[in-house]
Length: 282
Image 1 (cartoon, rainbow, N blue to C red):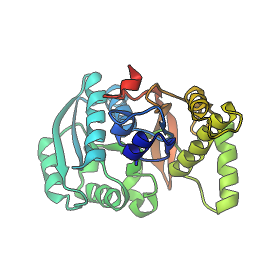
Image 2: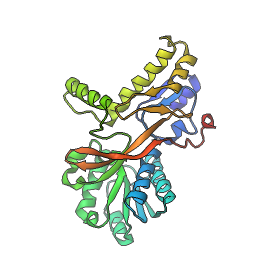
Image 3: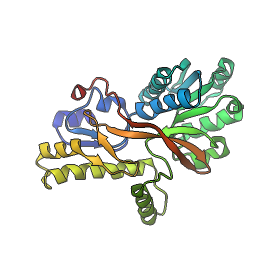
């Protein structure tokens, strides 16, 4: 879709996909993102693991595809920037969920910490297998928020106390989030998650562009200019757009408490993706 939008010039807002290349090598003046890059939450977790948790060594484990690789690279960059060392990068083909041999290898490596990138059913099984192996008693497991977002009910006690990082968390103490959560629950009879926030903010970003263009969607240059200049009042906290059109946003540290990813505070404030390969960011 990004390639089509880039070639056609149609304004394209990415409400979820985290692929780094979309605001990296594929960036364009008409392409914006209201979500995150895979690098952002993972980099934040690397900073936390080294600086706050005082870990010196870590192992990464992920599916071997773009999102997994980008997340593992982001963690390594943040972790090693603060003096840590990733001693092994473990991968398995997507969507394989046979983790036992890799868990055995982690046990033999004895790192201070493990960083994992899995989502959905894979995240459920990995967190439960990690807990069942006994590793969690001596080697803490970390990950980006997608390791526990939307999966806590299925993970149960296996996820209890886990720390993750993401650009959103439950119980953020700001008026926008409180109002958003209240209205969302009234409308849909369920609690909103990070995906709901990203969709809401995609609409807010477009609205900023339309307001700048006085409602004239055909005035594409004015719409784009308005989106570039926007300061979005988001439930996640205010964010702006980088030159590569990626959110410059807080990354929060969260702890699993019951069925919530409880906010423990800001892990990295106003984190901007490096947008490697994007000519707009030069």
